[in-house]
Amino acid sequence: MKPSPSSRRRFLKVGAMLSAAPLILPSRVWSATTSPNDRITMGFIGMGKQNQYLLNHFMNLDGTQVVAVCDVDTTRRKDAQARVRKFYSDRDASGKNRDCAEYNDYRDLLAREDIDAVCIATPDHWHAIMATEAAEAGKDIYCEKPLCQSIHEARRMVEAVRNNRRIFQTGSMQRSSEEFRIACELVRNGIIGPVRKVEVSVGGPARPCDLPEEPMEPGLDWDRWLGPAPMRPYNSALSPRGVHNHYPAWRNYREYGGGGVTDWGAHHFDIAQWGLGMDNEGPYRVHPSEDPASGQGVRLVYRNGVEMIHGGGNGVVFYGTDGRVQVNRGQFQFWLGDRQIADNRNQCRQVERDFLDNAKVRLYRSSDHKKDFLDCMRSRTRPVADVEIGARTVTVCHLVNLAYYHNQPMHWNAFSEQFTDGTGDPSWLDVPYREPYTL
Image (cartoon, rainbow, N blue to C red; front, side, top):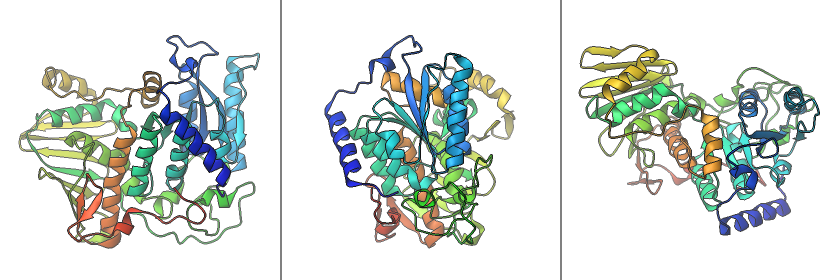
């Protein structure tokens, strides 16, 4: 897909109009009681496994209407359209509320004035372009994690969202899970004493794509799938054939993702930042691994002296002078000294009552990441995983990957988002785009 100058001008014009206007939504979004004709309308871009899940979840939330789906694979696109139509047909035998359009080109979806929000779950190399154009088109945005492919892309996305007064939820949904919030509140309130070290266990970095050519999948627009990424032959590991129920391997390759570091890292580094109170900052020193081939061992140092270590496995552990907290999905463990206070997630609420009843620091409480996004669309307040949070988290992930890719120490200014003291290379902050794509 090659972006046309006319479509780009249209988006810029819409963005300029919106940035000059008050932050308001159509009247249907503001209504306190949602009627069948008074809903948030949504479009979905990228209909693989993750958006299959998100589509189903959003359709089942009160006050939403899915009106469009988009995918470069005809089979996935048609399947998603059929599922939406069946969902609404089952609810309304008259069929008047079941229409759902399907698009191959996401720009056609964004051009629709009747769509309030988009849900983007494409491969990561497309996130920045789609999200910035969605913001400029006046859409609120739910975008899957990791936010994007580079540090400069992340900042551009924040600027587009802020300039166009959009609501943006990053899909780092662990912030809407009780065990992670309580773990971070224990840390933020000093229950385990000053934190000295955090271990973040996720997979390793990505590698250059070396997949062999396979026969093309019928009905797939391969050039559009690649978009700003380098041209290469088709391989089904990148875009699986037809409707599939697994997460594709494009995450393993640098041209399209950042490996486990940005995949699970967008969850667990996010929790580490939340627990440290670093949502608006980041590390200032990055030390490469002593064994970079192992895919673990990069160390990040924060201005307060806290060291964050990237390890293998899965989960987050906060080490304080008086105890530690270990958390993962469905797992929660808490020690004071050598005494274990909790050893499973079911004890979270008891720990909250016993240790956080009079806590001075209370973190954003969300129990449903998708509903939180819709609620914030109505209130025009920032959600639990706002775009700035997503940008800061993915920046940490990219710094970790850069340490593996280049095996050099880096000094980092988290406020200017630049390397300092003669370390690093400014070109590392970007990823190359295939012509004629630009951001």
